[in-house]
Length: 309
Image 1 (cartoon, one colour):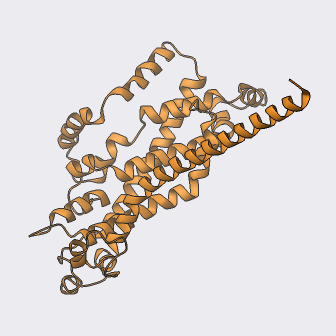
Image 2: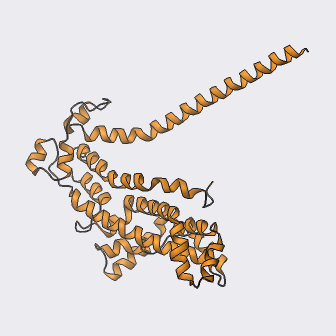
Image 3: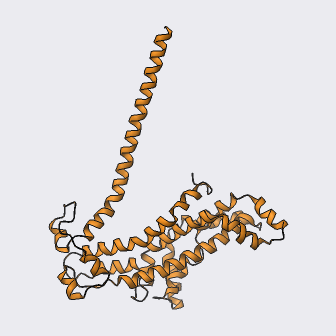
């Protein structure tokens, strides 16, 4: 084969490789677009339903856009209209108590997130840096709790909270989640292990103690991992329903997830008030979405340090 034929063959081979890569890129792009579409579709349909006049929801079930636009569903959910006006807007007249439930959710989520991240970080630092008997065995046993379904602990926790007289109180809602969880401890320990010990050793030479090194050196440089843990805990707590329902059903401590569930069951006849329910759900996603927008960048920054690759 001549040099010219060899060059032509190599050029054709290179062209075929580029074509194959282009096809592969197109297929990957189509796959990603499908996945993103399937993810966004429920959110879009929730928004479409919340902006539709209640009587038109069942009348035009296949309409892509809201057939009859209205913001009355949001006004009803926020309590900006009277029960009579709510009925005129196509609702049932039932009150969701959104503002009160939102306040309860913020209190519970903020309390659990702050305490759980703090205590989990302290426990993870102990497992990563301190040396004590059976440390690794205890950590393995503790992490093994990840395999226990949460539903298994609901009954004993409920029995304990009832005996303490903490039903329908913030204490009863927060108590099982107050200190730490195996996932948070495991996540933080993986990050602490990756931190160079020389930073702490240099602090010890300058006269710093263990607590000083932890709170002034290790924890500040672990901000990405702490923020990631906070996002995970806050999201999990915000979306928690079962425990909040059985312990905090009373309106005084009722959180958003429970309030939305009860609102769905308040329809005296026919189908639930889907317009009001979807409007309330849309508003309930706003706080956690803000958390993701503000702290989401820290998730990417901390993944490479925790062993999740």
